[in-house]
Image (tube, rainbow over all chains, first blue to last red; front, side):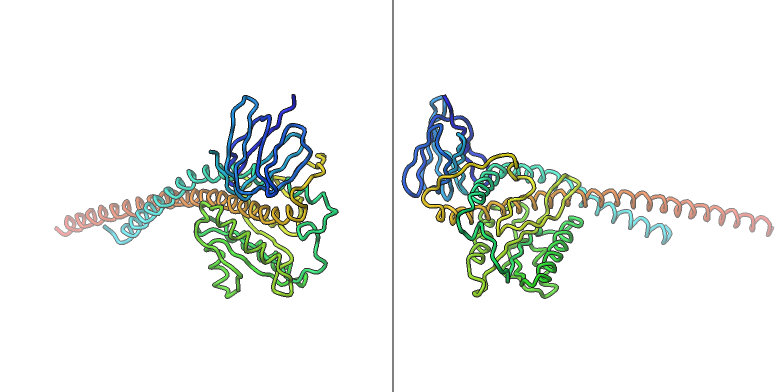
Length: 86
Length: 299
């Protein structure tokens, strides 16, 4: 099965990167879930949590503020000027 | 002790104290540059991601947005100059200010009015001494740049960019900073941030890569509006980090050559001092011998 290559980066460092089966983020329009095979997307994130389910089942949660989400070719990048893992 | 010998000894001790200082500064920057380089590397993923998103947007060019369109007439251009707070870094500040001067002259030659934004005490002092005006100045903290400052600078220039030219807004944003090529080489670099030029040094996506057609959420205009300041901030932050790393490298190099020079001076003056001491002794001996001769022949 295809997996998502996720990286969560803030302005001064890469917080987390790895393979995941699912990602849920809150955009300005509402919550969005990304599964492998999602179409290319560029979305603005609202202040809130980004939840990543890693392929090994672990759940990674990060607080992101002032950022955006880009999806292309099963590569997901969550970019926020300030973000931290919970 | 003869006068000459004393002068030489004074010069030796002064060179020695100077060498202690320059050696210490060399070691300090050597340790700081590692950290500065790590920060540049750590900010890489962010600026790569932002640049990639922006270039994706730019290729999606059937949208009309200030970010992607070239203005028809450019009346005013903003130039952000990244210098350092402290000197003793060789030609570091001179280079970046000369490059900025050339850019300013070129823009003025094209009939544009140039608005300067200065970062670092050295650029501020340079402008103050020449009584040239700067729109806004940020000093302090160039050694380890904070993202907040980059955000502040970004906000200032983006606001200026979004203002219409008739109200004092700018149509172009350029940045001038020192890029760290290697420990021995720092190159002043001029980049036009806006309107967008995707052609850039390190972070350009490969040409063969096909950029995907994006879905935007909420709307394309809003995404672009949100992306614009983020992009500018990330580029400015990157320039600040590069400039900080380059400054440490330049300081290390300048202080190393200063220490080497002090070594050479100490060596030279020690030789001269030895000579002076020896000739003093020789003179004393010949005086004693001469005196003894005179006494014995006077008998």
